[in-house]
Each structure stands twice: as structure tokens, then as C-alpha cells.
Image (tube, rainbow, N blue to C red; front, top):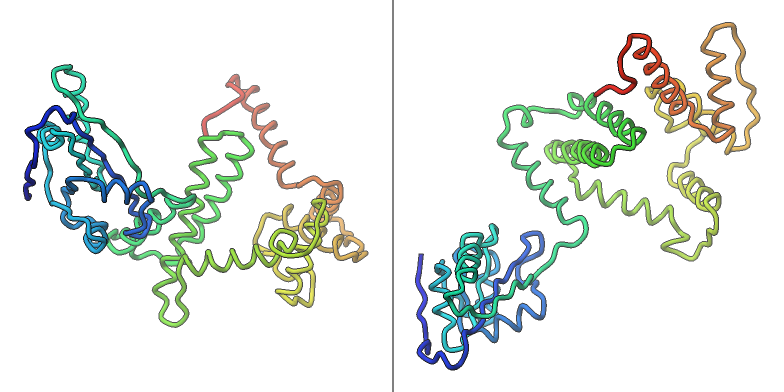
Length: 335
């Protein structure tokens, strides 16, 4: 580690000086600093950084900022501010906890004339910035983890289904902490599959392609937000969505795109919804099998604005509680 010189530190009458701890986000391109940060850097008598490989250093030096590689103690930093000098510390990724703790101890002792202390964020995370961390972590896991490095789309498919059901359960339970966690698990599936897709020998794509595709789709299907179309009610919005979706897909049947592998009640309701929205008067098939009765009930629920799958799960939970009561157990149970 290098060192720095204390210059003109023999004039205490000039005041105790100023320490600026400059923090930056690794999720923002290096060199993109706020105007107050550039002002502090240019006005500083000394600029220090403990990490000689800090990504900001080449850009600071290119801008004419002289940066010394040094990791001073709290007392050394205070001494460097003597005579009213200003010292900027470009914080490393860890945020300089040892230095800030040392400064706090000295300030609390009451025996040291402390310089002015300022924490100055030089760059800020935009909303969604932590997604970059997730992509970076997933990339490393894919390379270094013996299990993750061997996974395929087909092998992970069951986890996508499981995580989706757990998300629905968290929503229905109204558990905010569980909801946050389950959303993360579902998001992991998206990032994991996208990372695997990068390795395809013929048609690779990345998480950026996935995000770019859904952004384009959302913009195209919301002409009332991003264009000149007008939508004043939820029904207007749905009409825009269905119309633009039909133009995109150019399907020959309203049944196209409905996954047949979904739960039976949800499948029946989706088919009934497609037919109803398309204005098709298709009589329900009749039969003695219980399946036809369930089909009719699902269609009736959908027409009334009720999701039959959700309704059945709610009834099933009530039935579960009744069973537990008959067993002499509490109504609720940890899943």
C-alpha cells in the first residue's frame, strides 16, 4: 500500500478541515459521477483510494484528478486535514468500515478536534439495479457450481412449476415476507433459464434479449400509454391488449396458445373465456362423466368473473381446517 504526504498541516488556525467519503455504485458505468462529486474531487487538496484497481481511478486520472493509493488510519486522515485541508476518500466496494468506525471512535472520545465529515454518494443505483447483481451471481454459479453447471431447461422445468404454485400460495395467504421471497424464487428461474440459453450452439439468447422482448411487447400492447390510442376503462385496455396480441400472433383459432398442461379447472375457464371474448356461441359438450360437470361449473364461474381454480383452493383450505378440527388440531398449519 502506498502513502500520502501531509502538506501545509502546521496551521491549525485555518480550521480542522474536511473529510469527504465518496461512494460509488458498481452497477453504474465508471466515470458517471454526480456534479457535486466532481466538484468535491476538483476542490480537494488530497484524493485517496485504498484500492489501486478501483474502476473509477482511470476515469478520475483522465479528468486530471490526482489520486494517491493509500489506506490511512482515522488519526492519519484527521492529521491530513490539519490547516483546513480537504481530503476526499474514494471508498472501496466495502465502504471503508474500518475507517468510518475509527473516525466515530475518535469523535466520541471528545479529545480530538474533528474535521467536517461528509458522506457523498457519487453515483446512485437506478430502480432495478440489483437485477445486475443477480445476473452476475447467476453467471458465476453457472460456471463454478457442480450442480448448477449441469442443469438444463428440461431439468429445471419442474422447479418453475413448483415456484409458481408457491407464489400463488403466498399471495392467497397474504404473507408479505413470503410473497417477497417467492417472487425472488420465480425471478431466479427466469435468470437461470436465460443463462442456460446463452450456451445454445445455434440459437443462443441472453437475459437482455428476454427483457428486451417483453419491453417491446409491453410497449406495443399499451398504445394508450406509449402511443395515441385512448383507453379510459379496464375494458378498453383489455380490448387493446387482445387486438394487438391477435395482430402479433396471427392465430387461426382462439384456442391457440392455451397451455393444455395447466390444471383442469384453469384450462376449462381459459377456453370458456377465449370463446366468450371472441363472441363464439359454442355449447358445452354433455356427458355422464364428472368431468363434464366440472367443465360446466368452470365455465359458469368464468362467466361470473370468478377464477374456479382459486375458488376451489379456498374451499379446499376450509375443508382442510375442518379435517384438522375433527382431529383436535389447530386450524392453521405451517406449510
